[in-house]
Image (tube, rainbow, N blue to C red; front, side, top):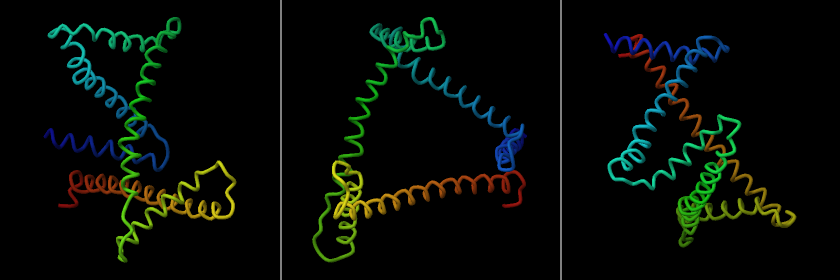
Length: 205
């Protein structure tokens, strides 16, 4: 019985969401607000259970790690954004968070994206086979793409043609990325349709 009720609720909310394809309506707004509310509530509970309690409260109470009062203080004053009279205090937390995030982001980008991309570009060009042609295409695409973003000199002559080839590679990459995104969304749509026809209407077995 509980499963049946859950299926009907899920099917109803699915139809409410897809009703936006026709036009904006109260059913869609209800499903949207319900989704946002449940998501916000879930993340509040998740933050308390997996961040605040195990990383702040328990270490302070059980292990006497009172040094954690400092990050707790910065976290609390960030909430002063809601009070105009003392909202300036939140700038300390925001500045610290942005600075730390920028430092970690730069390091992570270099180690996680730039260096692996450079390493993946350093491929051998020996022999006459499809792998060599593929490696040449990768190197050629990377170089011409970099030429497109080279603005220190007027792009004419060789730079102009390299820039045009580079924008072609960029458009191919954007197209492939967009196609992958569309394919993923269509996969989600197929999953919802299959749920409606199989679990709800029992048309598909």
